[in-house]
Amino acid sequence: MSLLKNDFKLECRQAKGMGKQKFSIEFKLEVIGKYEMGTCGYKKLAKMYGLSRDTVRSWVLNPKLNPKKNSEEETTEQ
Image 1 (cartoon, rainbow, N blue to C red):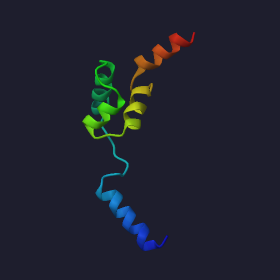
Image 2: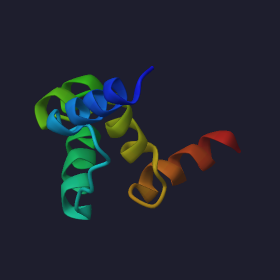
Image 3: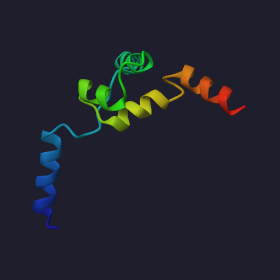
């Protein structure tokens, strides 16, 4: 692929906002809280907040953001 094509793809990604974005802890906790309420799944939350399904899933399963989820998994494994 030529350098020109690579530059064009990079510009397109940046224009679409596909770069690595930082979110506040408060925002992540809001998304996790909605998931914990049980009314929304990963896909629905991702669509609501303009995120990827995998991003929502990783936040929910992250023990640093969601210690409750981590402790539930430990009790079911024992």
